[in-house]
Each structure stands twice: as structure tokens, then as C-alpha cells.
Amino acid sequence: MSSEDMRHLEHRVREVPEAIEDFGPDYAVELDPTAHKVEGSGIRDATLGANDGLVSVLTILAGAAGAATGRTVLLAGLAALVGGAISMGIGAFVSAKAYRAYFLKELQRELTEMREVPDVEREEIREIYRARGFHGESLDTVVDTITSNPRVWLRVMMQEELGLSQGFGQPLGAAFTVSVAFLVGGVVPILPFLFVTGAGGLGLSFVFTAAALLAGGAVRTRFTGENLTRAGAELIGMAAAGVAIAYGIGRLLHAAGV
Image: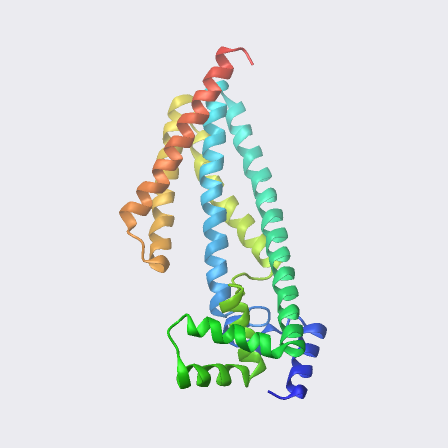
């Protein structure tokens, strides 16, 4: 590895931090929207938003249905839908931005250590691959190959030593995905209360939500390889527990005259 290569890499990170594609396909998220990591983060964000919208709005409706009647329940659901979408979007934005800043800070720190204490960093690479079963000449070859290319070296240090990868999209994109997914999911349990009130509306709301959770679970298992029946049962079971607890609290509040 030449000092010129190292200086160029440091300059690139410092001056154009968005150009993560320099470090290989796994880091191409900032400028390549089709990168695998972006797809993964998009699925994660959409799943998070939709599931939270379904379950949180349903439980709020259950609590409201236990304590009140009529249009009050519907208004509570709509308030939960709008407030939850805003809250989830802000949370996703802040989380993605904070992680991105942390990732870039660690990236720059590793670069500095590679330049100032390269022997220590090489020894860390050696220990990582010695723990994976490499010894003797094969270990020397691996270490020499990795440390001869600063981009490969940096990528290995970030992933293997720190366990950090660019598993997220841009903050605004994450916020948009989570918010929209929350709105789409949260509308489902509200729909029955447009036409039915009371226990009947809550029962239909639960059925609609369970069906949506199963559909979402089916989509998720295509990417995760999970068992559809088990994944669906887990989601519905958690939703049922949430509804029971929220409805029970609502009934207690109603009985107490709150």
C-alpha cells in the first residue's frame, strides 16, 4: 500500500463522505439506490412501519373501545394514525442520520490508525484471520493481500473488527418509507370503525389486522426464509395480547369513571 493511495482515500472520505461506493459494492448505498443494502434497509423500514401501524393503532383502538363508545373510538384511531406516522418518520430519520454519522466517524478513525499505526492494524487483521483458522504462509498471504489495498483493508476493519456495515439508506428515504408504511398499516384496523362501532367494530378490526399481518408475514418470509405459520402466529399472538391488555385497561378506566 503506497502512502499516495492512503492520502487519496483519506481525502475522499473527508471531502466527499457520500461517495461510499469507493469501498466496494456493500458500501454503495449513498449513490446507488439499487444496491443490495438499500433493498435490505427498505424492506426493514417498510416492515417496521407497517407492523407498528397495524399493531399500535389496533391496540389504541382497543383501549379506546374499552373506555368509550361511538365516534370517540374512531377519532382516537385517526389521532394515533397521524401521530404515529409523524413520530415513526422522525424516529427513522434521526436513527438513520445518527448511525450514518457514527459510521463515517469510525471510518475516518480507522483510516487515521491505518496511516499512523499500520503495524498495529495489520496485527489486528492477523488476529481476525488467525481466529478463523488461518496459519503460517496462508495467514501471511491473507494479511498481505488485504493490507496491500487500502480500500479492502478499510472494509475488512469496518466489518470484521467493528461489525459495522452500511445497512441503511438515506435518512430522508428511511423516514418516508417508515411513515408511509405506518399509514398504510394503520389504516387497516381503522376501516371497520367507519361502519361499525363497539365490540363488533373491534372484532372486525382485529380480523382485518390479523389478515394484514399474515399477508405481511408472507411477504417477509420470502426474504427471510422463516416459517410462514410460525411467523404469522407470533405476530397475531402479540397483537391479540396487546388488544386484550389495552381493552382491559380501557374497561378499568371506564369503570373508574375516568
